[in-house]
Length: 392
Image (tube, rainbow, N blue to C red; front, side):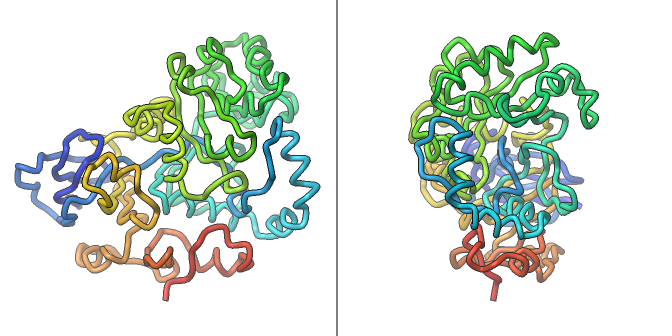
């Protein structure tokens, strides 16, 4: 069965406005607004924004049940870790009592509410966490850091000996995360040991210097987390000439749950233009992670987000969005979120919403393909990481 998103605005193309047809989990056609929409089931959207599902290139899904912890600025992540375990040990212990699948569920929900359809989860997938309404980046090897990853040299050189890794997979590592001299030495050390020339993807890179990023397939920039912890962030305006820049949120442990605030913070720093910033969460991310999506084009996966148009200019409207403005999220052609504003229209098209997926977000009622009731039931009310409630 097909579905046509009728009369939508595309802030970054491929057309200014038009109709997008989906069929069998893929985009079947993109038609100009001046043409008649294709035949089939239609969802009239009256000029709402449509764009590819966002790709969050760095998160720790199980850490999204924590509030932001720490009072920086710190020199590096080691100082931060020691500080929060000393000062916030009770909060950390209470959050860890929440079942691991529930904590992962909060991470999934955080991303889904923001229109993220694929996330690069750092580390091994948590045991027992099975519900995945959004996609996970596969085919990479996570190392925590040069300071904390045991046997990182062996894992870099012989990944096939560790949890089924492969030499051709990129190595993803927290690198140069801090402002001290030891962090400045990390990339040269990693490059020196990488004699098998494996692709390297660095996360954070605050202490990187111009001329170093050419050793990387990509740098995942996390400006909100960086500024919160260290009062500094990577010199992206210079490093973008040497490698691809992607955007990551990190977990709520070090920043806002709202991915749109991360986009706005990155934009406010002025280190990437709007097109590069958009691509950092769509096409560039898809290319680096070797994903098929990241754009709106026939044949591509139907990972699409529809959002309320909150400003006249489409680009300004995109960067002004918040989770409350998200109307519909499609993952491989499957509806995984919709706003109550669309509920009657979705029902008329044959979509059904399970009761346990309804929630209230700042006065907006939304349905998600997750058991929200279970998350709320298994999380103490004073530890809820997102501003949601059970829908009345």
